[in-house]
Image: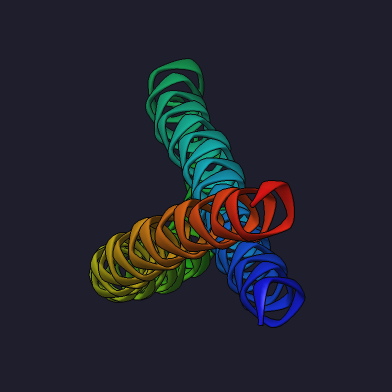
Length: 159
């Protein structure tokens, strides 16, 4: 009976270790999502920098070429191209912002799941610890009974 109780304690300890590994896995996934979000934010900053640069180039071009009609036509053509580039960069920026928002939402969902899993693991640890304590108490009672029985046997043998 004592061996069976010790086996139960070992099984409960293995369950505790498994729950702890699951928590570590969830934490690793959360870290990966956070890293991906950071990378998207860096890419967004790069696109915004390109947008500012394109706008500055457009302003510079307009100031440099104010002379003849042919130069104006060239400027207008370049302005159109730059505006198209700006529009493309704006669309790319908007897409990246939407992706960042989506990643943040996924991260929030993962945080919620992690919280629930952590609470569940904590509860499992508490139950396992309670069961372990109860089993240890039973082992102690059984040991006391064994010792008492051994003393009774000694008493009977000595009579």
